[in-house]
Length: 389
Image 1 (spheres, rainbow, N blue to C red):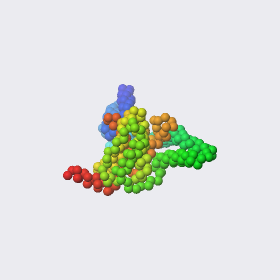
Image 2: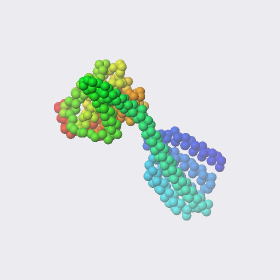
Image 3: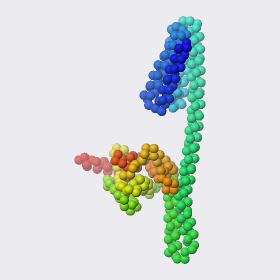
């Protein structure tokens, strides 16, 4: 008996250690491995126990069925993330045990076997019932912990908001207040106009920051209109050449004609400018090349507006978080961390998506996917047929 007991404890401990080492894997192969191990352990346990208790054939058959089916269903429900599936598994298991008890209790060859079957049925049912309620309580505690973690993340976001957004607003308000103070001391009308223009520009910057916040939260009002991509990118290319330093070369791949999307032109321009400014910051002070193009994703009805740079790219841990609200790897005050968050919010609000990829030769590719209008799709199809001919 002691040999059997220590052997069972050792095998169970080994199995638990195996589960702990594989708990992060959720593949179907892993679940089948768990099931097979459960069946093997249950067969060994049941065989050893029956051998030590009784040689009654009915008892042996009953314990074998309960061990293989019951223990297997237990581990399937234990490692499942679906509460409904766990409930269904426990109901089936209980019905199976009850059916086995009713089928075998009257066919046992001995009184001891009948008693063993009855107590086994009650014990297994009670065990799995307690396990189910414990599992539900564990899920409840896990849900409360997840809610607490979400609340903590909100508080961290608020902290980043106060150090980023508030700093930018203070700078803007300082400019406005300074110009208004100087306005009262300037006798010349021309000087007053200069101060007023600077104050208006600061107000515009504050309004732009608010629009970024609204775009990030997807609450901005979008004025969607049909937009031809080719002239839009040509105009944006000219603006980027005038805005970026001479050390950065701006290249535009001529897009296909008659490509049309339906979106808010001003928000799209702001999104692409944010991508270009991030590319500029990545390439300074050495400089580099910024590439702008429009790719038609054939078969998906999408247009990809792509901005590429020759900078160092992004590390995986940063790339996975760079679209989070208020996340920035810049010093405090140099950016609120809303650039790519705004771009992602605009893309999702437009029915598209944002993708970030490091280029093999170095640099970062930012692709903004937007739905292409039917007219643009017809044009692309016609162009493809003409090229094929």
